[in-house]
Image 1 (cartoon, rainbow, N blue to C red):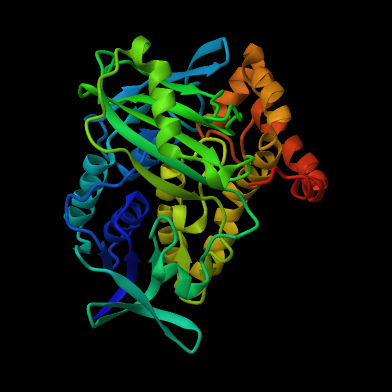
Image 2: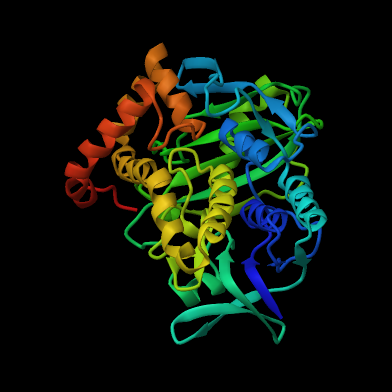
Length: 404
């Protein structure tokens, strides 16, 4: 069978690729290793940037629970901020549980004409160093471009070298659902001042994402740059955080067993002859919040655009354009993670992050994935300055990193 684009993975990035390709008249197949209706462990939050990407794709997101801003808590300091109104992104996000969100996008892809297959674990077919298609259950499907949308890197990514850089930051997170009378609130809540059971400050945060359906997605995440990371017990950390918010949220017991996942934040190789990696598979995860759905949606659509422009140069053009859009900000976040891995630097950093309105506005932009290479204003200037400064100090940051 011959396709223009073959996609491995049925998450938001894979679906965005399939939708864009099918609507452009391309022959596209998407292979999802799970069954239809499978759940994906996630925080379920959609940033304003993600809503903007859904708007670009023409996706109806009215069934999702609208979110108008973020409540940030650092120690005794609390700020409740609204998402900003900009020329680039809408001034609201959403919470859309991944089981329903992913299924909706797959339904749209199928309606657009994509050949979507479930219970189909695909691997790339390589001939003379070029990816020429995929194989699924013994069936070979040839394609002009293969898109890795596999999330945290698996077997297909390993075959092509699209793996996490072992010298770079990664994250771990865990989430559960719990009933709360505050389920319809319009603000996310992020506690930036968590500690583990030994009292060590956590470079990460705890979250309460109201889903509007009687429940809240409660979770915690941590970066690998913290002292004692390898011994961190995520279940214990989640329980500690739940105890902190139980009274204020009138939180009920977990509806199901908490589930954990790994957050890749780098990629050794994200393109090659005949293939590209998008979303989490390409390491497009913000180290400051663990969010990557918006990057997955954007990078999937960009891969199709590059293919339509010129199939012969699609992979190299994609790598250049996606790098221009994301690399500076994500690189800065990874380098910054080595700083906040030190408890004695994390504590004053948190005070600064929410200490003034100007600083809080920049923190909000970072937490909302609203910054990239073309961001105007103070937030853009600060991040460009941080990128240049941290580039110079990067060797020192790595030598003095906290012991995991």
